[in-house]
Image (cartoon, rainbow, N blue to C red; front, side, top):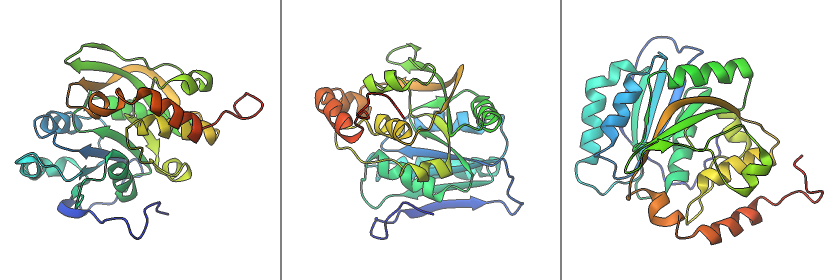
Length: 260
């Protein structure tokens, strides 16, 4: 079942390569969203190529990038490395829709029952997908997230920790880089567009609303690039107070003051 609407603009398939072999039941789809990250995306893609988990379905959604040569950079890389993946696809939105729409496009297109989501300016350590998939399946979690490493203009360790609904209602300490069951994405209604940002936070709060508890894998497996061109820097920080009110309105605390 798709959460996409019939009137949603259809992405153009710019690149598609699919193996003729039988689909593995352990196939992971990678939802990779890109907007003007041509200078970063090859590093990101190289980190996906190096994953120790073998069956991978790579779904790249470019959100109508305006930077020169972005599509060419991606298609050149895909042409050289397509055989690493069970399926490798590049979809391009006809016009800019924002990260939530692009993520929903990728999830909808994904072949795997589990989908790893990330932006094209980030990267993974080689065992990231193998370990998150093992945790997801053994623990029967709706999603699994890890600790992150910050790199780029700031170096350090992220704030990820055990899932705690009380703390999550106060502020988001979990990055969007996570392995998520596709049926759970459908269950919570996917990602919602919020003009100033915080779509990631809104998505995790939907888990609380639905009574879902993701698993935390306390290992540094994902790399988050800190740079001045990110949407977090450009928009979300400036609208912090307004976004707090939006989250409180969209995800009110139950009347009894406790999470169900």
